[in-house]
Length: 299
Image 1: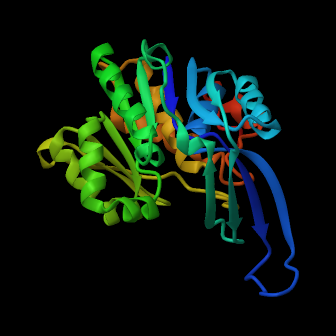
Image 2 (image 1 turned 180 degrees about the vertical axis):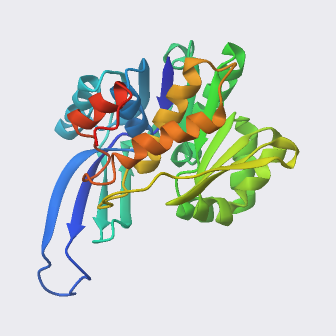
């Protein structure tokens, strides 16, 4: 089983038609969807048939109730605290698919006092670095302890260059190092801002995604590898692509953690991530999900 710990929020995705004209109307398509990096990973993993649990917090409100039901419908065992106000992220997506995000994490930032039985018994635990700040940090530390006690794979997503800046690169690296993850996921900007490739010397395999350029693998002892990214079709919205990558990667690892080929796990991540790029927010069409689960491309 995979346990994902972190945010569950509502995404308000705004597909813009061009540069903003300040002070007047702008043509756009607006879509509301389930969001939150850890919740997205859980839902994507569930679409692949993985046994998965999500641990997080939403508000005691209608939006929070709907988000929980969305996860359950995706096949996720949702262990969700409800208190306060559900968080929202407004995501502006330009015609190239690039995102600008305005997060208001709301209740998601207050995750605390999680029972051990929500976290234990997993084959893999996935953590979002967004939860490195505030009371949620204690939850991540406990999840790390339980992962080691259970012999589980532990993965962490660096999440945001702005987050690394806010925490401070040195402090961010120290926090990640203290969690002792098996794998750390980051994009190229996050890896550069936080000097995250250096964490490979601490025993963590660092996976650095570079868009259409090859994904880097950094192992202990200075060993590296790169995995080419297959040709990408339409890119309309990159929201959730990294979460899809993590879901497919961890699913591949769970199949056989002792014999896993990390390059194959990266390739699985590339395949699922590509399916998100033409859809608004961190969504995956039913057709695409079934095709991926059956090992076909659907092309």
